[in-house]
Amino acid sequence: MTRGLKMLSFQAAVLASTAVMMSTVSAMTKAAPAPAAAAIEIGNFTFKAPSLTVKPGTTVTWTNGDDIPHTVVSKDGVFKSKVLDSGDKFSFTFARAGQFGYYCSIHPHMTGTVIVKA
Ligand SMILES: [Cu+2]
Image (cartoon, rainbow, N blue to C red; front, side):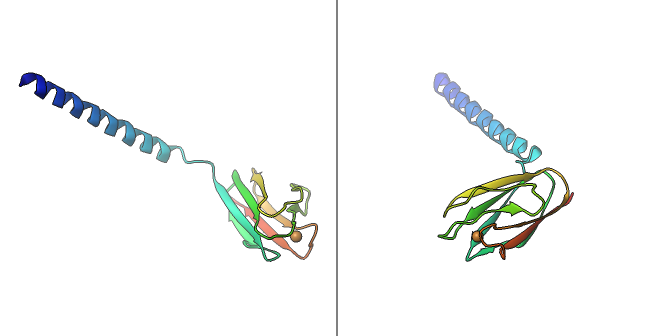
């Protein structure tokens, strides 16, 4: 009988330590947030977020949802994507604050702005 009880308390201890580990992991996740990320969908010849404000260090990812190619080109030469086919993505990390206008070099009437401020 004592043996059965010991096994039971061992299992309880394992369960308890697993719970502690799991709560530690979630606490760590909260303490160290993942690097900021933002997404801009391209569709119907428009940048779906024409003006997007992010914090410095944010990685912005554009995804071409159109079935024709587009590009993402900074007006000031800060970044420049290759030609993005349907479903292709382009990412850029905005390290410093500022206002970054961009356009599609294939369809220059397509424009957008990323505003980076702390
Ligand atoms: Cu385009």
